[in-house]
Amino acid sequence: MGHIVKDKPKKAGAEATTRARYQDDLYTWVFEQVALLKAGRVDEIDAANIAEELADVGNEQYDKLESALAVLLMHLLKWDHQPQLRSKSWALTVREQRRRIGRVLKKNPGLKPHVAEAVADGYLDGRDRAAIETGIDDQAFPAACPYSWDDIITRPIEVDPAP
Image (cartoon, rainbow, N blue to C red; front, side):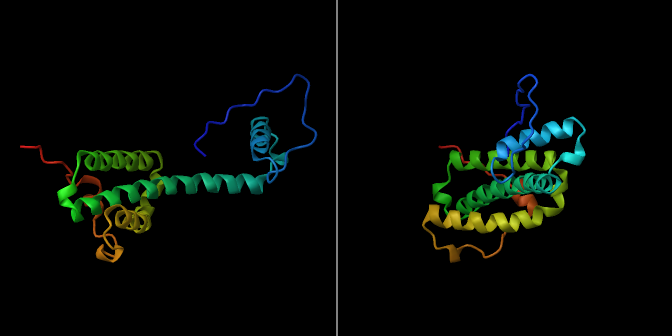
């Protein structure tokens, strides 16, 4: 989601008699559910759909981790397979993605047990992206992630200064 949900302004004396349906107007439905929860009217909430939306929020955090890993792993593969093309841009992208991964894990410590799965999933996407960007056949890259967690997060990636 990523958006901050603010209370929608209400018209004076206006009480919703007909509620928005989840599948018809998600935006309005969200604000109605927020208002019901804040008012303590939990017997009126759409619990099944709220649970589904909360699960989606959790999945989005995993997706952020996996996405950052895919970009990072793509750059590590490019770094290792095209050393003649190493650039400051690649090194800075690695640094940025490492920070993103760190922030996601700091904000969501419950993801830590899922890091190995996110690395495996992210690697498959990163491998494909590396093949596209380098023109190297994807079979030339290892089928499974060749990097340890320590390599992924702390391996030095720096461009040699020009002579």
